[in-house]
Amino acid sequence: MAYNFSDRKKFTTWRKLWIYLAKAEKALGLPITDAQVLEMESHEKDIDFAMAADEERKLRHDVMAHVHTFAHCCPTAAPIIHLGATSLLYKGLWPLARVIDRLANFAEKYADLPTLGFTHYQPAQLTTVGKRACLWLQDLAMDMRNLQRARDDLRFRGVKGTTGTQASFLQLFQGDHDKVEELDRMVTEMAGFKKAYLVTGQTYSRKVDVDCLSSLASLGATVHKICTDIRLLANLKEIEEPFEKEQIGSSAMPYKRNPMRAERCCSLARHLVALMSDPLQTASVQWLERTLDDSANRRISLPESFLTADIILSTLQNITEGLVVYPKVIERHIRHELPFMATENIIMAMVKAGGNRQDCHEKIRVLSQEAAAVVKQEGGDNDLLARVQGDPYFAPILGQLDTILDPKTFIGRAPQQVSRFLSEEVRPQLEPYKAKMDVKIELEL
Image (cartoon, helix red, strand yellow):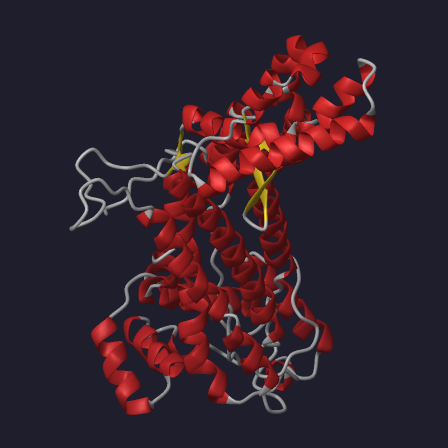
């Protein structure tokens, strides 16, 4: 991703576009020779950055500085470089599929491992570790679709000229509108785009940047949520991010294992979300056919958004490739809360055994409050189950208590939901990226 926004990538892309333009203009009858095109192609990557910098200091115009620099090494082609042209578009792509793949494998592995579910960060009904991971996956899958849509919706600005009217090209082709349209089509195709915008000002609409960066900002929000959840679970000691053998968690507290990767993702994700305000403001303040107050901003906000998204995804891939789950800790937390959650099941079992619902409800209410007092006021363990076992009233169902309190009877269809979600939505989405799934991420911490 860093290379995609490097000077070398940008300026060689400019040269490619000038070559495409020259080829198309030649094919449509302008006096451009094969020798001129070949000369441009042979020097496509031969960039004198020092000369370009000197030219830009003199001209105060980066595009013309590189036109002059290219012309210096292509003297034969110099008269036709950038002939009639003005602007261009560059784009970057990002690796998201591998994160989804790793997390899908994690969800499949732990599809039926019960764990406490939380609402308001208070213990609620049980879910499974895999089902919770699917909540993360669903957001990432939505981001994948958004990013693909933004990529597929991108069009080439095309060969439109200074204010978008194509006047300079119409003059070059002596009023032949068909040739101007064919030039636009040919250069668009050479540049790898299926479509060009039919109308532009001096630039394509800055709403295009809004569409691209809003998808990245939305990804940032997703990653922040996932990594916040991992940080919360690390505090509970249920799940931890990878931790190197000699890694130090805290300079003052040797026992600590801080979730620093997840924290780094959250920190960068906030920056990615905040960058979204730049293209929104830029699009809103463009005057008429174009003003230059967009340029400096876009040179920062566009690369930073893609580069930030790239390192966030690399870090998240590293996290998802090494997540550690502690089933015994999870089981202990379930045991601590499950007796309270099982009270309705106990009442139903007693009613089936011939008990009165109201009497049973009152018995359970009193015992639950006593057990809660032990937990909250004395700091003890939840002893509701022992209280139920010690009360003669519940004798008819004592043999059923192990079944009633089996955590897997409290997870509903979570495992089935995981299986269907992965097979119907996640795996098919990853199919086009199969060839690139084996790349692993090692972080320099």
